[in-house]
Image 1: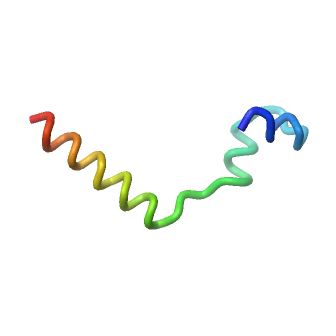
Image 2: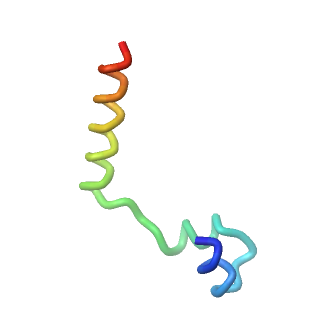
Length: 43
């Protein structure tokens, strides 16, 4: 991400992340399931 940020001339990586990335609905569902599994197993 740092390299892309530098190439694009952005002042920081946050600008690059906000401009060029987005989490898909399926990705979000998988991450929520992973967190749920983690917390259920931690108890």
